[in-house]
Length: 357
Image (cartoon, rainbow, N blue to C red; front, side, top):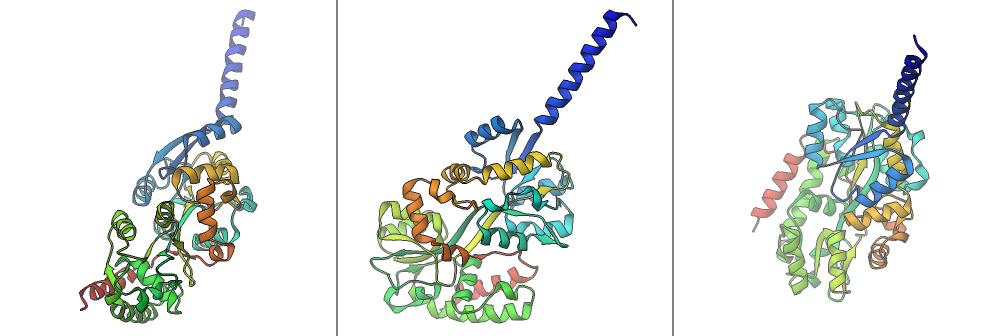
């Protein structure tokens, strides 16, 4: 081989090796997530700091599961299903891989949320999800007119007769059960016990019907009812209560005494993901309090990042801290996966409550 050819071959090999090194150092993270969870400025900061690139695909729970089922867990490196959409699909379809908790900076998480999510996403002794964005449903109260409403069953008090509202949906059944001193989640594995709890809740909701101005269907409908004063206390989401508080300081979200009902969107690793290092780097990056606050500003909900509320917008921070002192956060009742058959029981209860005179 001539010296010239040798130099050319050496140069080509060197370029190829350099190219491979660059690719390995800048793995692309294919992220399957919700709108607002990966803001452009956060993605840019992550890419600049780590050398990884991020490809964002927006989705929802149903689509996430469908996409991962279709590929047996391929096509993405990190997904963000709700915590109650992990254990069941994993047991049935094997679409996730276990999370190596040694790769997660657990000190950045609110402990009670991390523990709850790990428990609810454990399959066969392995953890498949850690928490990210969360929210709750509880009470939205005009404190100048319904100061006595501290728990779900207080919506049935004579002081607020004809001026309350809630949805005829499962959160109402669950919330009333907790407020009545029962634990519906503990009965998830016992259909007879769950039926008994639901029968007691059904009787309470029928008894409470005269207090109900209307059963609201959409968020805008409820907000208009509260703004007009037709409704002074309701079951609703925390973000709705905080929006109303911006218009009227007497109206705010109240975490019920028996516990707000919480949902969590997680981080989960698809079974055939190819960039685990980038996925763990993203999780640890966005859980930094100052970065998490940027996601809250975009998504409108808080994250499980410990101390991130300190970096939030002052007005939102004040509303959050007023609604959720630490003890209220620790008392949130997180939705576990729903076993088969329970939705049919709940549907029958809701139909009978609706039909009752």
